[in-house]
Image (cartoon, rainbow, N blue to C red; front, side, top):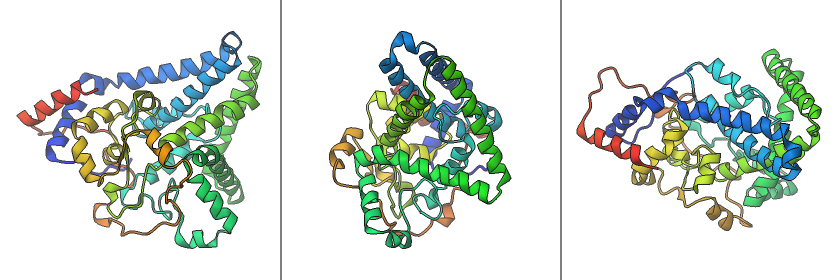
Length: 355
């Protein structure tokens, strides 16, 4: 994997992060191992015992565990819990969320982490912006659909459908272009999906119910997290939001609500994002120029009917000098000759106490 230099706020913050990385908890990755066990056991137990639980409760649990699994896949992509990408991939390949092959998500997301092209519709595959030329070509009814998608309820209801259609187009394109690696990726995904459908049908659970009543609502929940996650600011490090969400959302999304911190330091494990954010909250407020929100409820109130202005991209200069190719440090390893200083030690102690 390509490595670069993480966007630390200061040398002192770099020392703090390296000290935290030397702790037993971070080196063992115990929280992520426990997360893997919890997600898988919870998901399969919900299917195995769905008749005992009752269909409504089993469905609700499966929606939550599927959403959690999507958050786990993101953590695996960023180099956790092991330094072996292929081993991490094994933990995220099973299609519990149905639609997206792990490899497709991985490649798209790593391209998204090029901070200098973040939100650019030509280079960022996860952006909601369209190029001005593309926007101008849309028919009026299509522009209205985009406006509807950019409201909070529209993003939840329409967003997953549009993503699924784009994924199916990618599948069709790989076949038409005879893209052998992509076709093999899809073949593995579909075979695993067929096996999963067969297994749950043996337990009396409907695969169609899984697709419509579990997978789609889980994708809707992920759209809560990604709603207005990025903006097209001229400064690359001011393009990502920090959302001070309540703890249930933080747990479900593995602290990715602190999205500016994640893009600056993508190698931080999920259980380190909140610690670092709380310690440097004011610094991040200045860096991302006030792009901070007090929870997802604020987005819902502000954009229930009013769409966010994520249509035609306004354009900005690409920060080629500080381009972070792919994503930056997978892990934050201590420098070979890094010495402790009192300020870093004190800050690290404060970070360990942060909730």
